[in-house]
Length: 333
View 1 (cartoon, rainbow, N blue to C red):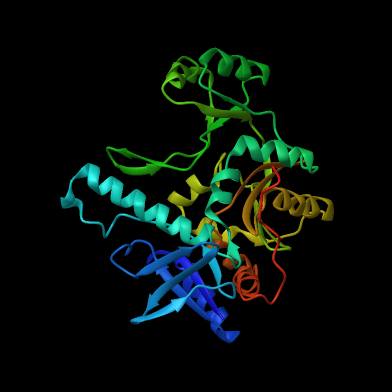
View 2: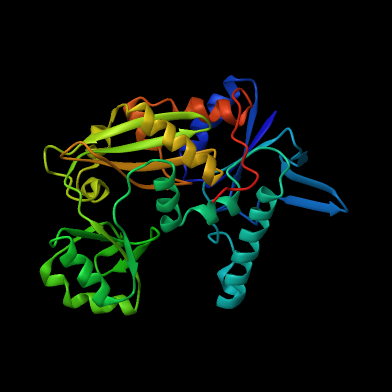
């Protein structure tokens, strides 16, 4: 069978999964989105109830039928779309390319890990927190607001122990280069600056004094756990920021376990969200309580290889049908 990976040329995990799929006697076909729409050629034909999709591989059209799985890994469009066409036309071409690829995956009659419209729907943090609480996970009090006074009141309600973060990951162009926006602690001297919320809403939560952070990677029905020990105090409120200073931080993650009740709750969450893949974050506080933060439907997992988690094999098994997939027709939100 064939597995179509929607990815890009700088994404290393696709090559790892391709090798594992080849060992199982199957083939992974790459659709590198940073080369699209220059290549490869794709087509989707609808005649009544009949849908036929195909991708061109080495000059040959390969059908994407129900026996084909699609792995919606990572999309990075626009680099090969001619910028000389003008800003408006370029933006339109990028969006049309994005919609074309989304439609290819969303309308597919076989397995898709995961369907783009599912990912867009359930990536909302507020939605996730509500469902997580319903399935038995502990969630932090959370404020999402553009109102400065509400944010200040939340700060005082939690005795000045509050962090802030954004709904989605993005980067800002700074004078010293481009930097991602990370979770940060709100301090007393920051309260006046909260007037800036009228330009951009933010998320506020009580600060967790973290003993360990867990990264839970779920592939189908398999739950794999890595942990980072915070006892050294060197990771602050966001280990990703520390990793920018010290690349060795990723090697500090170790294979770990969580109580079965938490793992089962995570599987119930994935059932409700309609996802076969997700990378979740949970914090353990100094009292040992576990706090669910979020599950990223397209979260990174490459660094978990250093912790010895069998994510590559789990994905290869799921995509080739060696293990059953979750029924993800409609997210039950």
